[in-house]
Length: 181
Image (cartoon, rainbow, N blue to C red; front, side, top):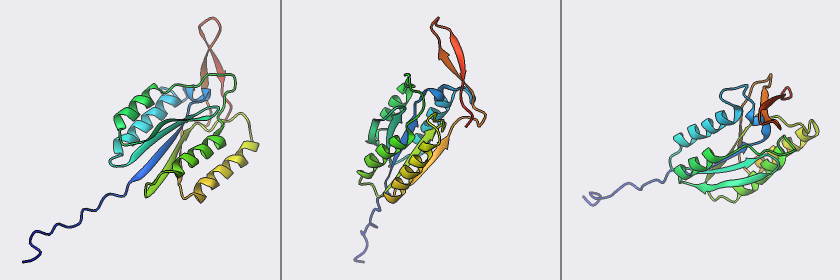
């Protein structure tokens, strides 16, 4: 008949752009989870990459401020290489400027033309700047929601906190206790 050679229309899968926002502040070195909060976080991102197929992956890291390390890409191998080489930001001001980082990641993700997008925030949630930042953070999450971008969070670390191996002057290690979450 007339329909003999007709092919059903190939439906393109609905693409999702996933931007991971990874905490690289000093407290992520705490070893209250093995091998460390940071190594555990990297493993989780690798697991996420394992599940991705036609979705684009992006990576931003933050400590003091947010830096785009991997713009949205389908090149998962390159993304893994960058992830593997990510390091903890040393420096005099430990802690994470979470709200600022989230605002930055929302503005980058908003520019994507993907039909679906999401942000995965991986952090230990420790911020020495205290309670006034909580309102700022809630505000940043609200901004993301208003942009139609869901924010998923993955917490690493235990509620009791852990010690952070801090290299001391003599080249050994001194332990500094992190604050309770």
